[in-house]
Length: 115
Ligand SMILES: [Cu+2]
Image (cartoon, rainbow, N blue to C red; front, side, top):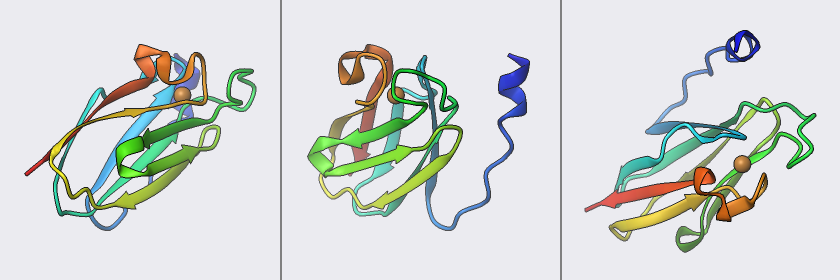
């Protein structure tokens, strides 16, 4: 637990509408993300796992098939993707890299695009 606290320095400020999502082998730190249709949003995905994880090598993914969006965070690092959802609705986001991939209920959540 202590180690985890030490490897989480704050991330720099980014312009625009940024939603921070963190992932480790236990899953995403948020199961639901709400965004507005027609407004650009940046997902900043952070992996809290190091490269010694045998399953996925510490990488995690945040992907939504219907929106053609996928970003992969490196071990103990972050990566961003910016997109503009156009169709209101509920979409499943998931990671397909680590333990069980998208079949793992912890490694998925719901992106809600509001009108
Ligand atoms: Cu993952």
